[in-house]
Length: 153
Image 1: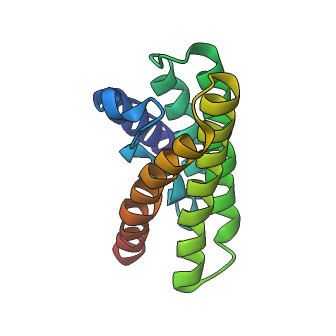
Image 2: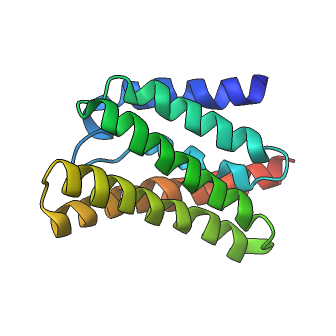
């Protein structure tokens, strides 16, 4: 319970702290680097619940309102669940997949569904911008985070 709360608070407060770059058609939600932590054997399901609850907290201030709370939370739930499933693939390949799948899922849900389909943002540009931000967050930051967690335990 404490680990879930810690992850949720870190995600929620961290996203709110970077709010100008954490929302919109061009965004880098750096806190999405926490999504792949559910891959880690000791964190697992606490990571799924933590980033999901943290997303609800963060999206309470979203300029996109209820659709972002629902779609963003579902995206984080699915993304972190895929990272959790990837833990059956050992080594670097498993960690890489645990970071790439979330980046793809968030891109589709936020770029394709929320921003393009619901709010009418240009599809290709929005998908490219969200994908770039998610690659930075989930892979460039998330992968070293996973590797550091593995070394620490």
